[in-house]
Length: 64
Picture 1 (cartoon, rainbow, N blue to C red):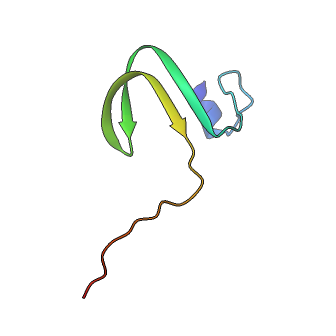
Picture 2 (cartoon, rainbow, N blue to C red):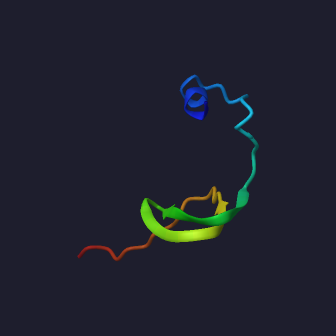
């Protein structure tokens, strides 16, 4: 049912909760595998996802 709703873009189905927020914290009943920036991040029972709207400044030395 979830996959069918995703394919048809029916996000009004009972298994979706859509909201706007800057951060969300999730607590899981059991440890779940977690991915961090595409890399395996271990297993966790707690996760916080935060949207950082400003770009990250990276400084590198100039080439000579």
